[in-house]
Image (tube, rainbow, N blue to C red; front, top):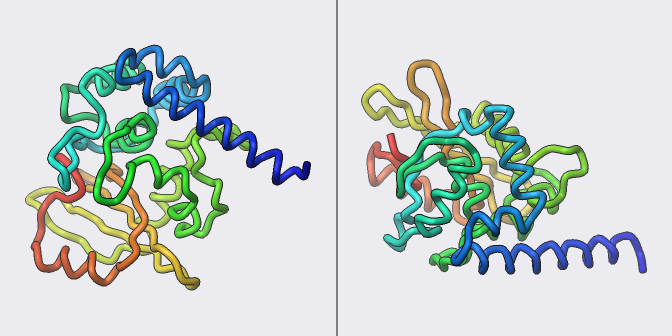
Length: 227
């Protein structure tokens, strides 16, 4: 068996464990966090380093479906583990979008929310290796939140395509259009008082259509952000 084959087996096993933890989360979310050593350890490390402070607030209710991506019990368990004060359905965007999505089994028009971290499309859109956002892949000891935060910050700094003024808050949309065919990476953040808070990132197949929709809507909070 080659090294690539061995890694594929390891990733398949990790995905099966994630599936089992997501199913367990519906019954016992605290046990689910402990069932995946890398998940609990990642949240603990990010909390200790105060990395969740770099992210803004978001609703866990998906704007496309009108349903919660994770139930209140999982929402509460995640925030308790991270030591972040929140009241369902509004919580920390990084905690919900990065780690909460991994435990979500709620279907959306675009598939499961966790797919953006698992299928490699978003990582490649950022110009990274396909496995760069696998949550259990810690070759450098960096948590998934650390890797996502770094990628988003760099994209927002160099590729802002829309800036919307919302009272005292500026919303920033950045898009990376890869030279090769495939999805683009979109990052969204809010800036106020000289401080930028990340909200979300996801792959986009039709960038022009998304931006046309943004322009047609006019300035507003997007993608489940809460001001």
